[in-house]
Amino acid sequence: MIEGHLVIDFHGHVGRWDDLGFVDDQSAMLLAMDAVGIDRSCVFNIFHPEGSIGNNETAVFVARHPNRFIGFAYVSPLLPDLMVPELERAVDELGFRAIKLYPPYTSYPLNHPAWDPIYAFANERALAVLAHTGSGEASEPRHLREAARRFSKASFVAGHAGNFEPYRSQAIKVAQDCPNVYLETCSTFRNPGLIEELVDRVGAERVLFGSDTPLMDPRPQIGKIITAAIDNEAKGLILGENARRLLNL
Ligand SMILES: [Zn+2]
Image (cartoon, rainbow, N blue to C red; front, side, top):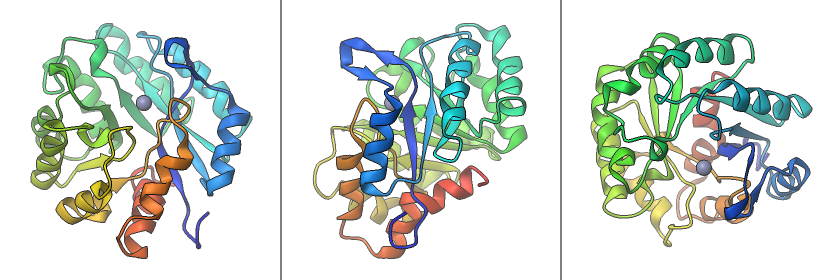
């Protein structure tokens, strides 16, 4: 909690990726959250394509501190028959509140029909879809335009806000064109002034704080928002109010 604002981190991971030094040590994650006033972190496991193993791990992780963590469902179009049943289970039984997509594992750009059943599910339930965006054909944020227009009741969140150029500009342009596209802030590629630029070009109501915990330490990730040259109302929206609205909390 910061100055009366609920703080929600929209991007966090469960699982481990040892090559990157990435380990989901929950107590270390909570320590960092507490140090900077993060009330709740959204987490997902992207390491199991069939979804259920990773989603169950996420559910166990969240259940240890259900007032601090929020589960997102992960499924992959590499196993198309399993996607929708697993999404139904993750949302209806595990209580997950949004969907995470990781296109670098696939050869499918985000406008490829392989993703459509996931988008249709999100559209039907009015859920948010957080997609990793950045370099690589599959992850280019420009492809979200078509999805956002076709599935207008779903919300599409460009993870890392496209990360670096030219993908960052693509993400900004898509958000300018589509009212149901949001930009999420985590990245190591954040030059001074970027948060101000996102707010200026897209509006604070469509920028979401995310940290990529535990791959990245949430403390510096939130620092660039707290110290940005934007007003307090904009900071409140970015730090939690927008996420609260998108997740129906
Ligand atoms: Zn991530």
